[in-house]
Image (tube, rainbow, N blue to C red; front, top):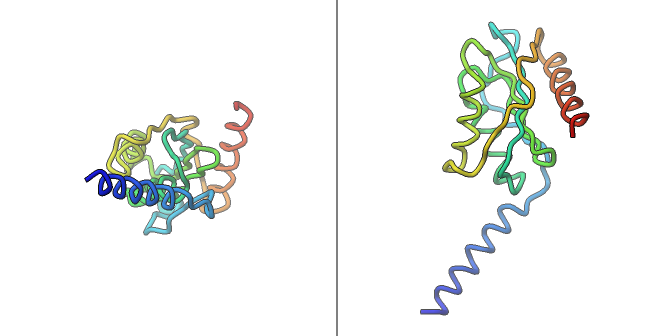
Length: 145
């Protein structure tokens, strides 16, 4: 009986280490059917400090993917190394509370918490402006760190 319990514990530990040991992707963005910034009524970029992540593949990836599926999301990117999430969304369809709730419910819930670092960074056009707004937020975050 002790041998069986020990075997199960070793297998569970190995699965966790293998699953969370993947470091090939520091920043994860999932390509899901997301809105174009040009289609949004109130495009906004939100920077969120995400606590509780232990790996890029098993934590950052699912957060980016789950939040990317929200109606009104334009871009969902999570940077594991920084512990940050960057979300561009239509504020007329989605709120920052919706995004924080999505983060906290990922992987069964109770693992991750999000704190808004910068909100209401208005976005006027598609890709170039979105990337510029995200870079601006990242620079502000680095300056405060």
